[in-house]
Image 1 (cartoon, rainbow, N blue to C red):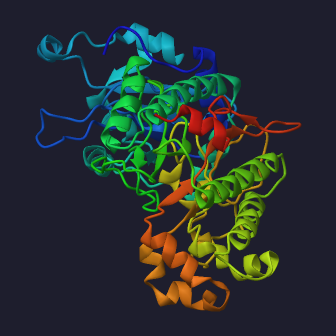
Image 2 (tube, rainbow, N blue to C red):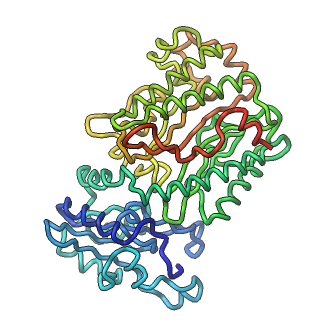
Image 3 (spheres, one colour):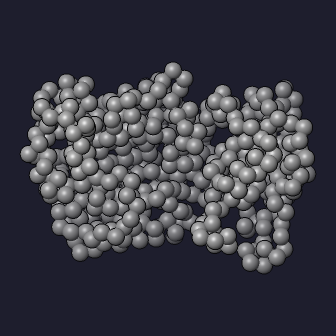
Amino acid sequence: MTATCPMTAPAEVYRRRRADLAARLERPVVLFAGYAPARNYETNPFPFRAGSTYLYFGGPPVEGACLVIEPSHGGDTRSALFRIPVDPDEEVWSGPATPDDVLAAAAGLDVTHIVPLEKLGRRMCDLVGIAIAPPCRRTHDLIRDLKLHQPTPDELLLVIEMRLCKDEHELKAMRRAAAVTVEAHRAAIAAAAPGRREADAAAAYAAVLEANECVHAFGPIITVNGHILHLHGHGNPMTDGNLLLIDAGAELPNGYCCDVTRVCPVNGRFTPIQRHLYDTVQRALEEATAACVPGKRYREVHDLATRVVCDGLVTAELLKGDPDELHARGAHTVFMPHGVGHLIGMEAHDMEDFGDLAGYPKGRTRSTQFGTKYLRLDRDLAAGMTVTIEPGIYLVPQIWQRDDLVGPYRDCVNRGNVDALLADRFGGIRLENTICVRSEGAPEILSEALELDAESIERLTG
């Protein structure tokens, strides 16, 4: 590390967060930064990325470090940072480590509260503590050795409730991530043309991130096979008539990120059916976004988007019947087999390491219906919550080969029209923005600067 820390907020913000958590704790919590996983052998690691909860409470991004926060019970907050001591030999290879005084100033800690990691066991021996850590075997081995406990759901909810709504420091970071994401999407769309490869668009995207000192927030999905929802390879050629789907986002050094999806016609012009379905998805995106106001249940936002999708599928003659009845039956799920969005912040799927505790409040559980059961969020929206809205329409061969999924809708599907699109390798259309719920009025669309309507996308392409 260099002698700077990529922190999101002033030190006082981190002190306040730790104090707020300490006032609610019944037992100490140890927040772990984690370690960089080895790519194939110990001295060839992937880049280090600290755990998000550790970062949120003021842990500087130091590999192997951990932040201990003890209950305050109305008194002073007791926090300490435990780090691996600086190894002079390692500094020969990796450069100077950040000094303790710099870490302390950035995190709002007394420099005397930065302690060698080997003393953590002594600190915790008389305390019954809980651990929150990223998925990392080395860290989990340490948790086992320290005899730390897993947090209860109620203890995790203390953290979740603090992280759910973003403050202005966090939103400033997310707006910056969105600006880089917009620039990168434009570069990738401009790289689309018949005869080129998905890899050309992926390279254009990555170049913008690198130029802005960002990394991918998740494995970028840049593909002509948009019906494969999580496809990370970029080896296919772009051919005339293809749709190129770009689902990607920038992550800043402090961890905050953006998640955006656009689709462009590789040859610069949508076909009539592509255009109709694109316009349908755009309308679903816009109507669902407008519904994101405080107090609105996110499942209702999902239902609004999928109702618009049903209407467009009927006018496209892929479904037949009354759109309301089709929606009630779930016929849209064979064309949109996922939820309309998710939490976002320090992770593209924010706090997903906490499971459905983050996305579902007490008393609500996931649907058992195919497609809808993949909805990651069903909370009531509140001011400051940042979420994605990402409806889509796909022709997934693996769905249409399964009678258990398609059979219930045999009477309302125009199978000949569906099969024609499958034969043409239609792929998929998904449109996505990252938004922030405001206390009043329409939500802020962090990625609003990126072109959305079909004509603008056509002009950007190639």
